[in-house]
Length: 148
Image 1 (tube, one colour):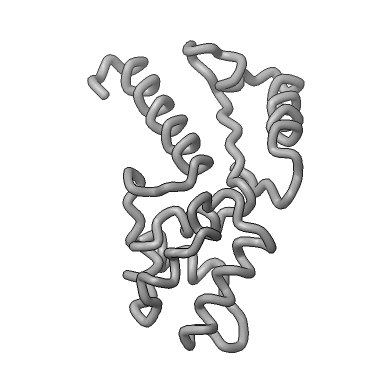
Image 2 (cartoon, rainbow, N blue to C red):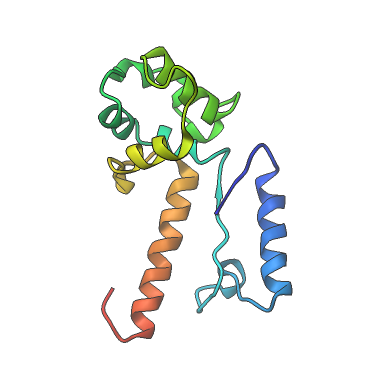
């Protein structure tokens, strides 16, 4: 899992898959439904876009932020928020009197993720990641003879 960080996400994924292939590992992309060892996924644009995909989690973690904060057109496609999602999240937090001297990314990630519900997340890149994890768990269970 890697942030896109304004790279071409398809080229970045291709590069990651090639690195795994050159190391002798089977990627999910090449496995075509069979067993795989590596699943490369990209958080489009940055991991923080996944938080914007679940604004309810942000509001639960930081209750001073009102629901209306996330109603604008900017938040309809959270994977295409311009200007950096980390910066956008920091600006919102600071506007509502959290972390005036700078957002501690790891702390904020831990707090928000406690409230995230994967099914309701509107980030397409998060849902692709989630689907891959569920497939991986299903394959692992099947290989052990368990029900998924």
